[in-house]
Image (cartoon, rainbow, N blue to C red):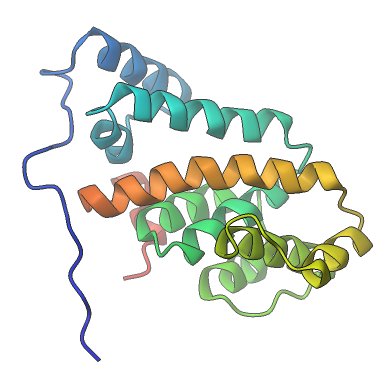
Amino acid sequence: MSVQQHFVFQNLEAISDEVAGPEQAELFGTAMANLGLVPNMYRSMANSPALLRSYLKSYSEFRENSKLSPIEQEVVFLAISKDNGCQYCLAAHSMIADKVAQMPATLLSALRSGEAIDDSKLSALRDLTIELNQSRGRPSEAVVAKAFAEGYEEEVVLAILVAISAKTLSNYSNHLFANKLDDAFMDYSLG
């Protein structure tokens, strides 16, 4: 089976510090202050400051207001990134899951490979996330009922939509730019 080539930008390039306009420079400064680096993904997204701002806002809203634990947040982000086939975000969130959220290695491995998760609550969360992403917001009753039986409430569904919006922006822009993985995430590359 042949792999179909997809469109990748040929004229737009990652914005360097040297050519960044005032708005881009401000966004890069914030990233540097918060992360200690300006990820390649941000530099590409900065071709449209509105895109980068939208991503950062939805990402921040999910992190701050989802009421999910850091591990649960990474389950959601990893599930979406894997489902959307974004190797860049899968590597970046694997690093965050490991180093920041302190996710157990077996859970991280299962999320990265798509294997079964031993924890029924986290498994239900991953399944709900993937179902919401794949169904375009029309999840089956069975998947939602499984998540609710594990203690998640309707507000979590809305929080996952915020995460899907953030990851759609980042995953799709990573596909369009074919972003090179940053050194900080390289140890978590799948290939």
